[in-house]
Image 1 (cartoon, helix red, strand yellow):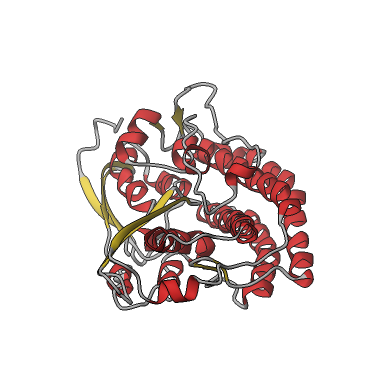
Image 2 (cartoon, rainbow, N blue to C red):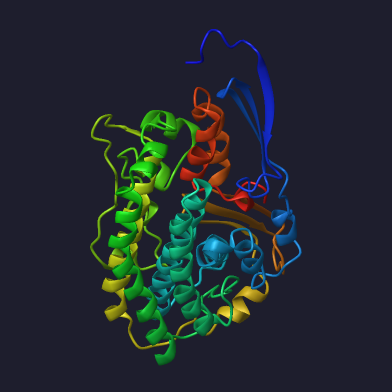
Length: 378
């Protein structure tokens, strides 16, 4: 609660120029240093991706989607490809299914490596900022060896994948994955063992599972409340390989307030997400069979699509990510496209989470939600 003696309010724009704002702007109303009102403002990062898709053929469209969030490009391009595959009814070879899933999970790890550093830097913990970003380079080296690019990978394509695993790639991939496994205990100690970090995050930015579901949160931001909601388990895609192995959805339980989460719980949840991704990859790597990496009829089928609608979705790093496409008969481009990014909900949830917090806690709250502006300014 705000002290009664302070009745003078002030308005502050957090962004777009603030170093922790990453290109968006949020208007905060303060009484003293307590936030009494939060007004998120989208639109500072808009690139009209949905309109751009109407002018790209069905092999080019995934490149538009991956640029919405380059931190998880393998993930971002998949819902578009899945929507195309459903319209055409393409069959993906088993080798490609497993390879897709492995790279999507490795990309999830990369995105969280980036988030570790970003979140720590926003709280002024600069040693924790630099170390995960050094580790990212090993992951990006593997991406570059496979696709020729470190961020805009253009790997998943209708009917399969574009590039096969090579011995040199697998060597770099193993180096990157082993480094992740070795460094998780170190980063846990750096974050969870830091009294300063715990003071900045415990009890900060709290909400309940019921509130989170009402606001449309998904991914780690809802699993941190103890809700095991995960598309990889609840509705596994037939063109991915999550149903080929046994694994458990990671959740976090707040011991003092079950069914709630704070900024600290959301960090703990993302540690569990990385550990789960490592486990999935380790189980899938030995299962990669011999065979083609793409349906040989894919190019001809995707050149012109029949009339129809396709809906693709995936459990992204930040939550549920979807693409809806509508096509006319013999179409070379979509008639309409709609993208649902996970961060629109988490950004506007700040309107409800932030009031009552102190101004210095604002970076900790929105950083703990892992927002990425491309997902709401599409």
